[in-house]
Length: 314
Length: 178
Image (tube, each protein chain N blue to C red):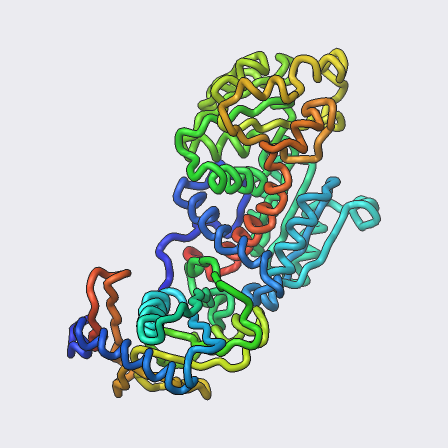
C-alpha cells in the first residue's frame, strides 16, 4: 500500500506559528477527504477505533467543544469530556496535577482550552499524549484558523493573493493571531481594522496592513472576517458604547458593497448581532458563517487523524 | 528493485480489461443493477476502463463510483506517516445494487476486507463481486476474486508494479524483485 511522504512533524498542534505551509496544505487537503464522511448515511469511520481522546475545557466553549466531540465520534474514538466547573479544579488542583491524573488513564490525545496562553505547550512538554490547542488565552486557536482557511480555499479556490480583511477586537483575539500566521504563511494579503484601543501596538510586524476605518478595510476585500467584541476578556470596555461601535465598525449591507463582488463574510462565532455585524449581513447571501461550522468538523477530523498515526520522529 | 519480467504490455492490458468487462456482463446476465466501484488509487482508472468497455458493448450507461478505504485499514496506527485521505464518491445509493469492486492487484486481501467494511457503511448491496487486474496469491484472509485479468504466481520477495496511462504515463505490469 502506498503512503504519502508528507506528514506533520510534531506530535501536537499547539498553534499555527510552528507549522510550515506544506503542513497547512496537508491538513487542508486531508480535511477535504473527511468532509464527505459527514454526508454519508453512516457518519462514522473506524480510523481512531480504540483511541481515547480527552476534551479538557477549562474555559467556556460550545461550538469548539461540540465540533471536536463530533469529529472524535465520527472517527470512532472514545471521548471523555472534562470541564473545570464541578471538577477537582474547583478544589484547587493545578493544571499539571489534573493532566497527570488524566494521563494515568492513558489517553492518546488531549484537546485543551485554557484561559492562560501556553497551557497547551506546558502539557505537551510533559505528557506523551498528543495535545491539541483548542484556544489558549489570547495566544492561538489553530483549528479555527484552519477551518477559516479551508472555507476560503473551498469557496475561492486558493489562498495565495486573496485579500482578507479582519475587523474587530484584534487585541483580545486568539483567532486573529492564528489567522494572521496562517494567511501570511499561505501568501494571502491581510488587512486589520479596529478602533485604536483594540489594536495592539506594532502588529504590522506580523506582515499585515493596519487601517483605522471599516470602509478602508472593506475596499478591495475578497474576504471580510468579523470578530466578536469580547466583552468578557476586557478589564473594562475600552469603547465608548456598543452603539457607537456598531455605527463605526459594524458590518451593514450598505457598507459591504465596498468589498469586492461576491466577497465572503465570515465570523468565528458567537456573533453579537447589532454590535459587530448586522443581522441582514449575517444571514445574507455572502455569509459563509454556517459553512465555517460544518467545515470545522472536517478540519478537526483531519487534525485528529494526522496526529493519531505512528509518529515520524521519536 | 530489478525488473524480472514484463507481465503485460499496453495491448495485452487492454485485451485483459476488455475480457474482464465481458466476464462481468456475462456472469450478471446483463447490466441491470450493476454498479462498478474502483478502489483508490489504481482501481479507479481500471474501473473506469471496465465501465467504458461495458458501456460500449451494451450501448447503455453504467454507474461508476470511487471508494477510498484509507480510514478502514487495519494498520492505521502502526504506519507513519498517515496515508492521505481522499473522498469516496458514489453516484447513487448502493442498496440492492450488484457492486463490482475493482482493484489493480489482489495480494493479502486486506485492502478488499477494508473495502467491504467501507462499502457496508453506505448501505446493503444485493451482491458484491471483486474484479482485479492481477491476482498474485499469498492471501491472508478468506477472500477471492470473481473476475481476474491475469493470475501470476509470485514469491513473497517479489513486487508487482502496475503502471497506468492515467497515473503513470504508460500501460504495463512489471514483476520486480526487492
